Amino acid sequence: MGFRVTVLNALIPDSHNGCGMDFDHPILLVKLQERWIVDVGFGDACRLPLRLDERGEQMGVGVGYRISTDEDGRWRFWERLENGEWEFYYAFTLRPCLLSDFGEACRYYETNPRSSFTQKRICSRATPDGHLSLTEGRLIRVRDGRKEETPLAGEAGFALALREHFDIALDETIPNQE
Picture 1: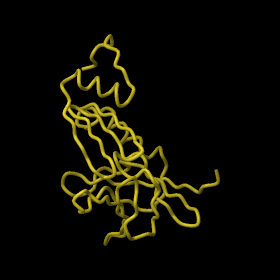
Picture 2: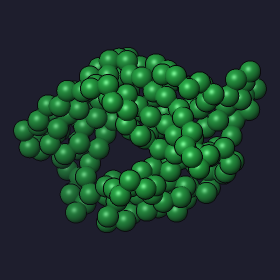
Picture 3: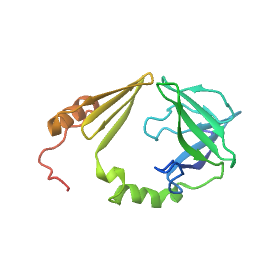
């Protein structure tokens, strides 16, 4: 399509306020007349491209984002919360990488018992005004930057929400994989 796209490595913060494993999350740098960051795969992060060189707030789908640099020369991606505070999402550099560089982290998330993705079920999708996420015990709906959580009534509530909001019907004949 004529876009010049470079895969970049985003470092996700860990529980100790540092950054987690290398090659944890891919983002894209798209070069047109301006440089753009594109990332549609990080939870509820921005689904719209953001100007890399814009230091002010940029609007996504009902939510504000910004990109800054830190003292180490890394770029930092932020989201404005409902209360007006900024939440740090990840850091990145402009050093190109390959999608294959993310293989080890992908295997970890898919197979390691300590990975949050092997410890719980999650399903997410974008909506015109935000997104929906279904996880153990709750349905999370974000509309125009406002988050609503609805508790679910056990397995029946989970299956109903999965069917109603994601058009997925569980086949009850499939044995539990635990």
